[in-house]
Length: 429
Image (cartoon, rainbow, N blue to C red):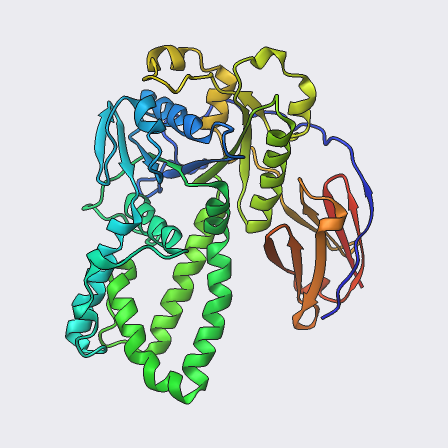
């Protein structure tokens, strides 16, 4: 391990790129509208109280008004969304308006389905010898971390990102708007596949290279694999190596899905009048980039939008910045009025995502340098490490660690690093 200290910092605003035109009505992959194209997942990141829940409701209503089959998914007992939408939201799909369904994720209830799947498979292979069958799901409480796992499983049912094929038995939506508990959970979700890949590598080594692993892993693998049934397959008649490969491919597919802004669109939301709200949005921009996701745009949410200085929007260049209409939360919203007051700029921002992403990593083979875009951080918060003989860089910033694989022609030891214009520039010897 060879840590490298980061040196010299300068700050200046990047020039704004030319904004794209209007997008297609149907939110699919930008280059084509193939029948198998998956729907989009949309979410908002920002400081608590900045308007994430209201923004999610506005976005869902807008997509539905455009004729897109939309689902608004919430994960909170806070009744604000129900108040805004004017309908009761339960833990199953409920039609709230034309083209718009809603659903509330409640982990204590969502635990029951995966437990039942495990019990069914266990009854066939008898791995736990009846112990699992005796577990009463309704008695189980929610432990830390369970919310994130269950959320992924619930979103999978709506989006089907585990599979390359459509399941005709599943509800299909053009857009799913996800209002998560908090921004930190979304960051964990974005980075989960990369972390899972690292853990999987070590678990696989334990399973294949230790006595207890070789003894226990085949049955445990079959229990988990047949319960999850990725791509509808089972483990019957298949080698353990095939199952490991399936899991690795699944994780890779999900990782690509979440990194594609035409499928997963994250937007920043803030109150431009409050400096802490703006600073938090900038930090979440950097954290999302570190986690492997993309921020597709930024929204201001305030009652006095025209009093905001242009300097706030400039802090988020080269991203597009727009405003959402302000909604009082003490009564049901007049959605016809709200959507009429939604600016064309805001509509274009919600509709076009794939062409509004600033590249987070670029390689210069001539200069042998790697440039990483890291907004929201300063040089004192960034640490740089190297492992595996100089084939990778590990960048630590905030609560995220990011691994960047170097092209073969650029692999080597770090020669130096500097922080310029929100970019970490690393030179390789």
